[in-house]
Each structure stands twice: as C-alpha cells, then as structure tokens.
Length: 103
Image (cartoon, rainbow, N blue to C red):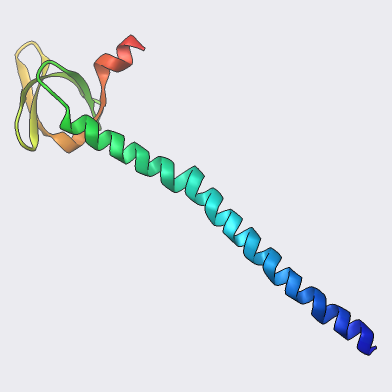
C-alpha cells in the first residue's frame, strides 16, 4: 500500500511539468496564429492610411468607392461621381481600390 502511494506521488510531479509545457505551447500557438497577424494587419493599415495621396482610388469602410481629390491632416475629399464630393475621415478608408483592381 505504501509503495503504491509513493508511485502515485512520484508521477504527480511529472504531470505538473506536462501541464506547464502544454499551457506554454497553447499560449505560443495563440500568439503566433492570432495576436501577431492582427498586429501586422493593423500596422499595414496605419501605413496605408498615412501614404494616401491625391489620385488614389479607395474604398471606405461603408463600401463607398471614390477617387481622392484632396488630403488634409485627418480628412480626405473623395470624388464619388462626376462632381459629387464627400469629405471623410482617413480612418474610415479600408483599402486601396486601384491595387485591388489590378490583382
């Protein structure tokens, strides 16, 4: 009986290390497959917004397609139809339509 208790106590320590390794592995997988790609996407979006210039074709978050006719500090003016212009925030631009059309 004492021998079986000692064997159970000895194997419990190895189980703790295994659980720790599994937890560390799950955290690493979560970081490399979820957090890191999201950070890269946010970095690329910020860079894209900073590099918008006059003449670019863009799509807003709301789905409005337009050509940039003026760039200010935090806003853009889009020509959405012949003479129809909208002033929007730079942060509401989701992607570059000219690059998407060529791909």
